[in-house]
Amino acid sequence: MGLLMGDGKAKDTPAARREDRLKAALKANIARRKAQARARSDTPAETSDKTPRRGGPEQDQE
Image 1 (cartoon, helix red, strand yellow):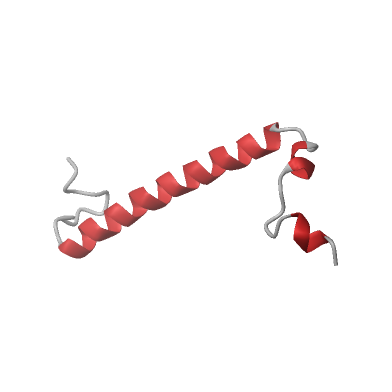
Image 2: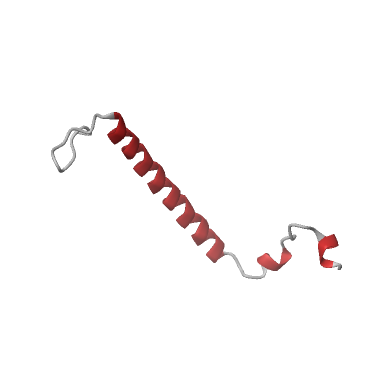
């Protein structure tokens, strides 16, 4: 079942297996990014003001 695709060609070559792995990884990555974006949009906007900046408080005092 997994060896044949809709076009009728055998998918047992190393290149085809690599392509299938890449497709699966891309699909998982997109799903993870969508979940992260949904989680960020669900949080209140005021929390972003309370997160520390990368340089810390010393960077703000110039």
